[in-house]
Image 1 (cartoon, rainbow, N blue to C red):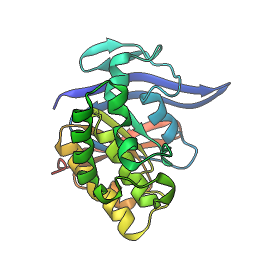
Image 2 (image 1 turned 60 degrees about the vertical axis):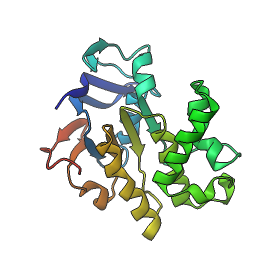
Image 3 (image 1 turned 120 degrees about the horizontal axis):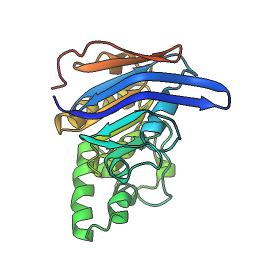
Image 4 (image 1 turned 30 degrees about the vertical axis):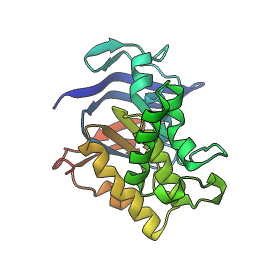
Amino acid sequence: MRILLSIHQLKKQFGERQLFEIEHLTIRQASAYVLTGLNGTGKSTLLRILAGLEPAQASEVVFLDQSLALAPYPSSMRAAIVYVHQHPVMFSTSVAHNIGYGLVARGLPKAEVARHVDEAMEWAGVSHLRDSKPLTLSGGEKQRIALARAKVLEPKLLLLDEPTANLDGAAREQVIALIPSLVKNGGSVVMACHDRDLIALPGVERLKLRDGRLQARQQRVRVA
């Protein structure tokens, strides 16, 4: 399976404190990963580094067979990697506008934006919320809308920070059910989480941050 992203000697420091030093991180195309570890080990920070939202040092970065540097953050990675925060920020407009915002920013024609937004809303099960304001939505609805907003950009790598945190029952199950289809469509997903059901999804490889190092478990059957 082709490698999407490979990073060697990735280091993150806050002043004199070294948060982690990762000897090697490899993310394959059309693959899913869960990133686990105790609170404070740097899971969210690692995702933000991969998304270009935090500075860090690395001896080598290869993205889609192209050697790059993390600073300044490469435009090719910025266009292909999308980060979804644990508490998604939304504009105080409609659900449809929130989902389509990134496409509008890219300059796509209105008709094409509308088509992609309709498809994403149907995928996420939020079509009935098209004209709703974010302030009226539940946590589960906001998380599914955030996933739809990311999906329309067709990222090669989607970074999810605690996607099921603070969700219970049906809302949590609805979010978990969306994950396999992201990989089936050819994208890769890395999820920072403590959720046992996400960790146990078929085909998901586990990456664990511990004592400033990254441990990987052998990949199981690919997500169907």
